[in-house]
Amino acid sequence: MNRTTPQRRSSSRRQTSVPSTPSREPQTTAPSRALARTPSTPVDLQPSLGREAEEGGYLDREDGDGGSTIEDSQTGASLGQQTDGNSSTPATPNSPLPRQRPHLTGDELAPISQELARWIRLRAQDLKLRQSDRQWAVDLVNHLRDSLLVFLKNSDEQPYFQSASVLNSGSYYEMVKIHNPNEFDMMLKLQSPSRLKMTELDQYHGLFYEVALSRRTRSHIRSFLLEDGLTISASKIISEMHRLVRKFISTYKVPGSSWRWVVNRKRPNSPAVTLSLLEVDDGKEELLSVDVVPALEVPSSQGWPLAARAGPDVNNWLGKKTRRSLTHQTCFFVPKKPPGRNLSEAAKESWRISFSHIEKELIRTHGNKRTCCESSTTKCCRKQCFKLLKCLIEGLKKRYPQELDALCSYHGKTAFLHNLSIRAQDSLWTPHQLPACFMHLLGALEGHAKSGLLPHFFVPTSNLFAPPTFPRKALVFLTEALEEQRRQGLPLLMPPAPAPPLAVHSPSNSQPQPSPVVQQTPVIQPPQVIETKSFVKMFKIVALVVVLVCVVCYLL
DNA sequence: TTTTTTCAAGTCAAAAT
DNA sequence: CATTTTGACTTGAAAAA
Image 1 (tube, rainbow, N blue to C red):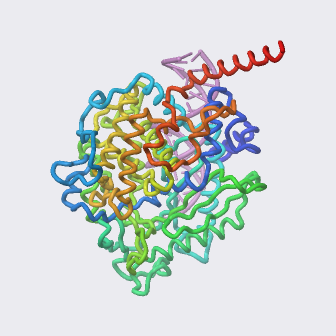
Image 2: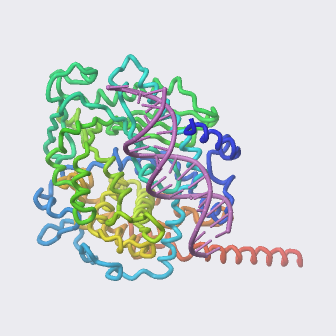
């Protein structure tokens, strides 16, 4: 009982934070922090962009799949780095950036100015979640999750879901969520009664599967089988999930009763049932969002499908032993169709393979040595780099929603994992190398974009940057956008609205202006201008001017 | 300002029911 | 035997020094 009560009690202890205002300004004690943050907070909750981009990448939206252009052998070989070797570089004709070599160190890249480095560190600092925000969000989300589990357990009308259990996943639980703890992902694990027959769908290079039981069963799963009595229907599972969650929510009471959860409309290509937390009175702003994804667990006696056996290239990074322990774990299937219309019958009921739990473990135990991040002397900056990359990707998507529609956070995650496996040594990632490491990571993503080659980390035959899902046009756009970000000192990493407390100019950042990349130049100022110190300076100047004007007025 | 200490939360598995 | 409870361990942020 020590587990549940303290949470509640602690909430009442900090009365201000819980009841009325979910987060932000009020209890922020550090003024500088409040200045820096207030603007970003509400804006980022925008459901339309933020959610889809972020979470979507993870389980939901990204569809790397059947790239037509690359042959499998090549992809497999190239895992992790962009082989150009011979002819196979399709993307941009003029590519000044040399192909990334596996182990180049910071100084081989363009040098990073003092200012930029400082700026990167500041931004990394600013991406952290605040505990007061977490406390509020976590109480609500955990209560929701636990109640949903109880509901499913007692739901007699759908026995198959009674044995479901939750596996927390996604960026919050990977400890790489940025800005706000406002998005949570959970997989609802569903047991398979027998071994599964996993049939790769042609043309998708091992990402999408038809999943069938290997023999007939009397388990409760049988209400979700197709007519053949073996094939498991993805659409039946997801719609039933959706129905159950709706039913649960219709009776569920949010503790505190200032908010309510609503079940979002079902999106045709999404494996998730998405819940949004809204204010009871004005139900406009989405305060939290939770994705629940049913996930079919492959029995542990069965290995991964063939395409994933070539799987994560972590031998140099984590060692063979760790690799074995990873690949011996189970994998999951989430009910997700491949993108596009006019799908075959099998594709309509298809599942996508998911390694969310292993991604989580990789990001958590990310060190070359066991001792990485164990004490202050062995700290590394890997996660910080990843957070910065996420931030940049979100920024890019916000600015170019149409052009970069295909881009999602999973591309960032994949590039990050490849980068970790290539730059394996802990000594390359010490905290003071953060700016250089981040530029490396950015360069890697740029390289992937240039070569049009970003193999799925676990299914290397599947290229996440291949044309059907990632149009060539978008790829070129992305390449140029990244290049420009780098050249201009990462303007998009600047805080969304630098000067809201003063209500001075420049909301320039928040309005999406889908101008071609080149035209972006004049809109954005170099980062130094907005940096905190300079900001203070600016403030002083403004104050001085105001005083002067007052004096003049008075004299007149 | 930077470093150390404390605290909330997540995970895992042993112990208890 | 299965489910729930408990405690040890880890991480990251906030408070204190």
